[in-house]
Image (cartoon, rainbow over all chains, first blue to last red; front, side):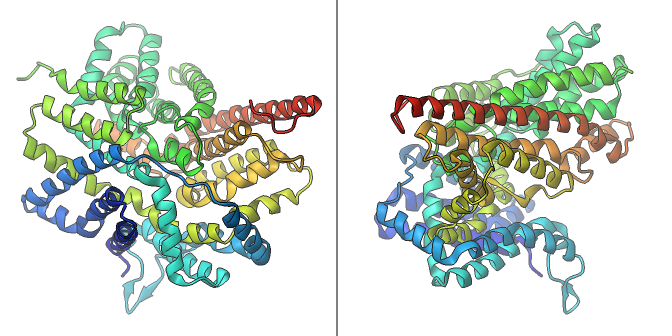
Length: 323
Length: 239
């Protein structure tokens, strides 16, 4: 059975290969960065199993690695090499030679993910399911990437190893930005453990006039946006704002409709996601991927949409929840 | 100490805000914030390191997309982005607004059907949507300036985000819907997931309308800039 863990090992192997290439080019901090990052992927299951057994040491090592990654990231700047005219010409030539067949492997990733996701329940090998039924989306994505890689090698007639070289080029140009989503989720875990959310909810509910339902609604909506901006994730903001304001004040005291409040309240938080560098995988990573000079370029282009949608959401809630 | 709230962990939030404002390296800012918040909450350093390490490992799924990099890298080396540009340029009358609004609508519909991770910045926006957008914005009238190109690219990423975020909550089995339902269930209010997800529709429609207008405005602004530069007789003038 294809378990997610096997795919994590592949990611780990890819990171180690990237570290090896950098080591050969004597770029030591970049090499150390990828090598440390491969740790959670190679040893992830072992660390979690040790935590289960109440052994803290492996997790502590991993925590030390996180701190080391932070220091290494601060040292190395992001460099995206512009291509030389020769490279550019070579790409234009092969684009003209291969033509639209180039699209096939790229589109195969989403299409195969989808097909495997739906077929996954029925695929089995010797009575064992082929894909882990508990992580069907992820194993489908992983297997689809591997199948697309085979396709890409056939279409381009490249050596299979060439894909690792090119993958590493992309990985290096992403640099520390690749790590941000994971490290931010980690911060979310620390904030949850230190009760930052409850403190903020307690502060807000202490200063609003709780008898006015509009004041409560505004505080709830703004709190969702603000807290999402801080945490980078509306999922983290939702239980906190709901427990602090939504449930006790809006639903129980003022009789708001819970389904509408929940659905549109969550989407109000999403407006905050469009605004925050903390949602790095959506806002910062693409700025690096697209080689924008301003790392906040994507956020900048989302600000007007986010603000307008926030107003729409508050208006919708004001109209619909107190029926 | 029940009833007494420890406000010091909020310093971690302050570190994040100040660090991002001063544009320090985000990874370092976040690691520092975690350490500050944890130490202020009185967590001993060994436990804090273990907490950092455990949550870090638990979230490794976020980097599974690295498996797509070898495919995309190889295809890019053999001219995928160049091909995407020429292919879009072969459609006459396809403007930036038409292209990006079509993608926005398509992305929302896919998300609503539960196909949330079908597209993404690494596997679709960088190799396909961004170069196609540039080509559509050029419309066969010569290259964009650097500033115009960057705005078109940023808009391509924004279209992906808006389409994804404001479609996914309409899908019943999506995590957010289950999170909402689970929260209420723990507090004694039983709701059907469908009754929650349907109320995401009005916002989804508003998001489509608002962002379509914005893409159209971007195209109008770029077209105007290009006309003005054309009159001055200077092509590709720096702004």
